Image (cartoon, rainbow, N blue to C red; front, side):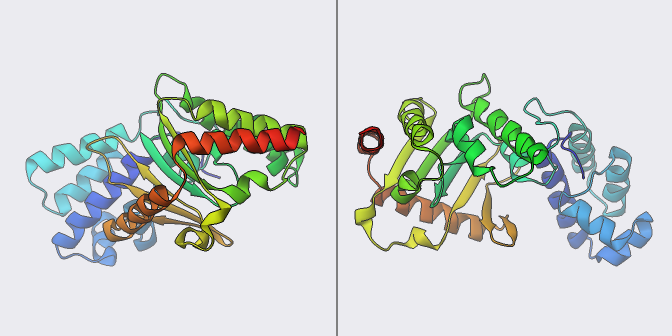
Length: 278
């Protein structure tokens, strides 16, 4: 298992830029790999941000693709940046995983159907979700989840826009006292200046969001564009094409307009907590 120790977005940025330059040079993966003494599969992984690129390799690629001097220097600088530890790193997290990407995002737009968004979960609620895992894996997942939540109030805060289907808040995934505490926690964190929380009510009936949950991540300026992330039964899908990411962003905007306002959503959360308490 690869562990997260370098900035994931710098890998993505470097890989995408080098791929663009390779294609501009008219070289296939096989041709470039042969000249660089790198296998086609290894070069492909590098271009997808799945493999580390040493600054010397980055320079060799830049020279092969005939980059202008200014661009060559910039590409090598990105490769050096990718070797520096990220201040938000989480030990034991795969470099290509969602937590690794989220750790470097400046904002996240998240729509959830079945559960409270991970960044807004309490430890007991999260623990209930991991109940079917072995002790070691459960403890690891819980550690990662709680480390992610720290960014809500840390110095390097992440901005969160979360929309949740009402059914996610009424589904008894944990004991009543855990659900009540989770609802009250939602009411509290929804007041944070960097958190926007909305609920799509049951009264909305059938709507586009029922197709499934998704997330749109935004990263610091001068790195990479927004990235879409979709979990599914067979794993996950990272969307990088601007058209695909824009489609998710538009869907999120539609869901936000049809959802309850922030104040109404907080009121509903408190009402649901009261119902569980009675």
